[in-house]
Image 1 (cartoon, rainbow, N blue to C red):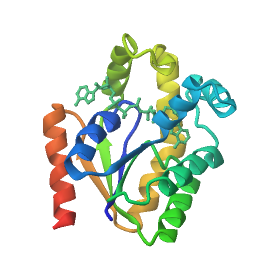
Image 2 (cartoon, helix red, strand yellow):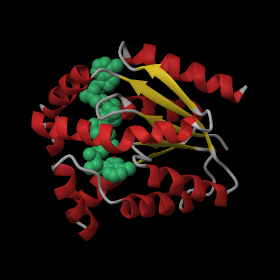
Image 3 (cartoon, helix red, strand yellow):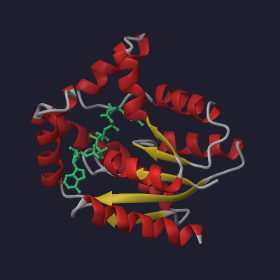
Length: 192
Ligand code: AP5
């Protein structure tokens, strides 16, 4: 089993690249943002609580997202590997993920960190907000709050995996194909 964390700030291209990577490597895509948006669409109590937090650009509590990931891991016993997108986002989530993977006799193979400038992130997300229907994309102050939350709470995730020498920084500006090819070459190095 080979497991990947696709890491990076809001708008860095995690979702875009995840779609291509899962198709190429046959991994199961686990995006906590997508899981939370499904809860919102289904109007579950968890979704209603999460929506207010997400609309402010803040992080949903660790125990909520760790619970969702734990269920998703259990629901996919045949997976060849997992691609984590938007998770983990705090040190506590990183530790919880490592523990869950250990219980399944596996671990994170690599953390691919997309590097994109803040102005490019804001430009991409405002642009997506014109059509996506995502309420957290329509307002520049919420987009900036998401980036601030990332800097305050999520950059430590890279430090956490750096201690195990698992982090690779990949340039996240350029065409989607150029970035995809750089990500594939890092994965292929580790698979061979
Ligand atoms: P989440 O859904 O994870 O969103 P995010 O991290 O803010 O990331 P995005 O989906 O906005 O961006 P992305 O990096 O996937 O980029 P994309 O490919 O879409 O989280 C949303 C919220 O849920 C959080 O704020 C939080 O409240 C909550 N949450 C989620 N996970 C959580 C967790 N673990 N713990 C706590 N709370 C959690 O691309 C963006 C745009 O750029 C697109 O329009 C795309 O077409 C375009 N684009 C992509 N690549 C390129 C390129 N190379 N050049 C030009 N444009 C490009």
